[in-house]
Image (cartoon, rainbow, N blue to C red; front, top):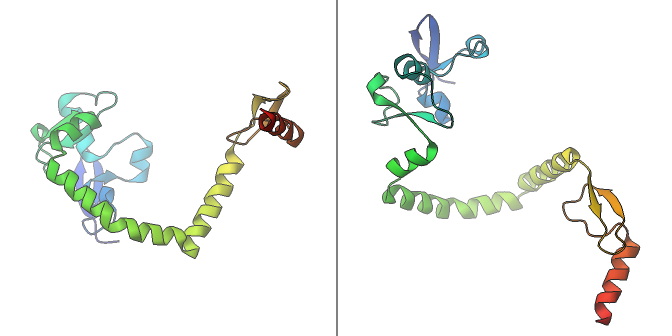
Length: 171
């Protein structure tokens, strides 16, 4: 990881990594783990709360001029994601996003068909199925209640499923 840019605010050291791959590390000043555990938020959020009060429920703190280094309290605004999008999501941005999706779609499809993609899906499916909780369902054929972890379950047994299919075929 690149060298950190550090700012100290109210005795807390905040860091950001200008060359980091992920946006959060590259754009925002973040406190250390010990300070996070004490409830210290990102620097722009701390500055906002010190000057404007608590961040309203369901809102995020955004930069009016979209410059994440401009920590002037007048540049910080709390908005819901929908309000922010309505104000900043312009037609050219939407067009660029669609063009980007069109460019990467074939690469994503190729990855999903690759051995690595298939293995990821196998592992993800196993983990998802392991987390499923049993639920009670009434059999559509006999009316008995049974437990299942399947996402769609209509019959308590193969016998009830076959009986329902035979009755449907005779109609």
